[in-house]
Length: 158
Image 1 (cartoon, rainbow, N blue to C red):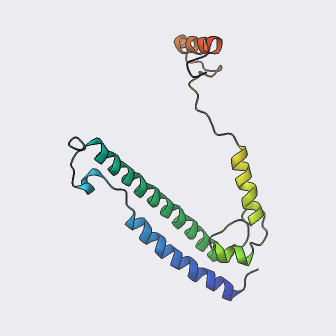
Image 2: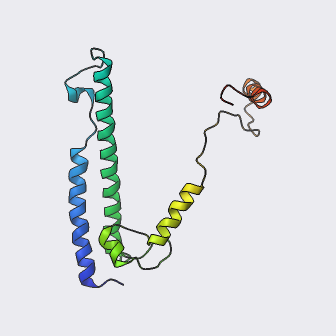
Image 3: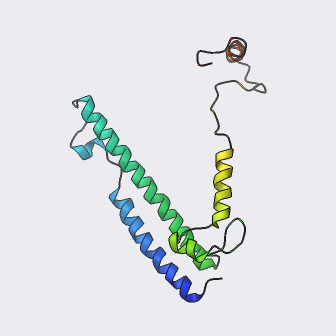
């Protein structure tokens, strides 16, 4: 269990992280063509458009990362307010002081985080399929016929 001084220390760190995260979110707003002084992409050379697209994607990733960090920090501050800070959300075990010092918004012990990561890696990613489910009752036999042909003959990617 963390002492009042330790909780105060982590609360200060989290508030500082929150302020930094808000600044990162504001500074990393995704760019548009207008930000480059262009009203459309028609008059750009394809290399210019690719550079702009890469920059927009980079800004989007930075923005998303900053938003995710801000959410984690806000959750940690809420756990401080509810008295559950420093306790693993999965196991109920105390999170080590060293882990909290390195990652003040941690909500799991190292072991619980490893287990969660292992489960995420083990669960198969859903492969979107265009096959019609057998229980489909829409009555469109054309789709079912295509599915039957694919199952019998395969498709160009098989």
